[in-house]
Length: 92
Figure (cartoon, rainbow, N blue to C red):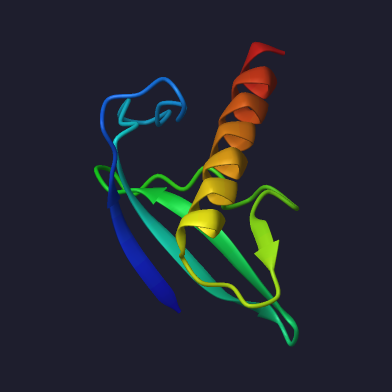
């Protein structure tokens, strides 16, 4: 497993954590999910909330994995989608 600590400037790009409201401090993770594929995802570095944890297909999949800038960008998109999905589910 590969990790990278991330601290962003104040922004409107990353959706706020549903548990603590953080959208600045995260840890990016990359780990094998099958023989030829890795998953890349974000975890809130304030409360350890993981928006994509139980969301099937919610994490970014990449053959090589890693937590480089491009994969982190895709993990942010997955985080945002997961937050939107959870908020949509809560509304219904």
